[in-house]
Amino acid sequence: MASVPAARRRRFEDFSWVDFIINALRFIIIALVIIGSANTLLTGRFTFEQWVSLFVAGLAQGSIYALIALGYTLVYGILLMINFAHGEVFMSGALTTVFLAQAFARSGFLNAQPLLAIIILMIFAGLVSMSVALILERLAYRPLRNSPRLVPLITAIGASFFLQYTFRGLYGSGFKSYPEVPMLSGMVA
Image (cartoon, rainbow, N blue to C red):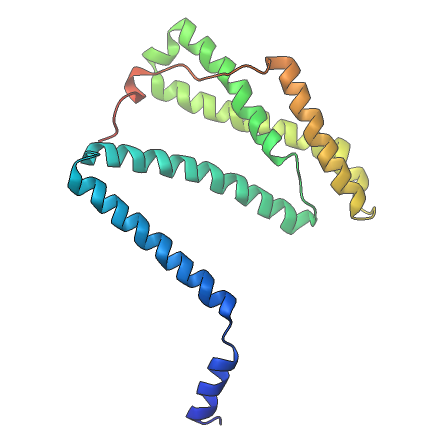
């Protein structure tokens, strides 16, 4: 059984300056965010309703980033390859759904039944992304399962370019936006 001084020595032998600096930076950044948030609330620069709206928007954007990162992690964990076309697969559903949403807005369905329209749009986006991912996996990645690691990596980069330019050719390179829904516009709080 190890003595207490030996346990203390082991703890300091495992000490890493890199970990210490990274943890100190984390603490400083969190402290600055809290101080800045409190300062803007106290000075009246933003109202509480604006803060809630910013929080919800940040949570939504962060959820999208987390979803994409989770996809990268799952693909790498299962296939042991980095899928550089992962973002393009995600984009395929979102970009295709823009046109369905615009059709819903023109027909009046988006304003008449906004919740049902949004559910249909989300299901459609998932189905389009899933279809593109399955086609990409069957045509580009599955034939290369037992090849050297560099070959699927180059194929993933090529698939990324192929999907980018395919969707640019289909939908154009201009700015696209979802139509506004009165029920979803304005402040959250």
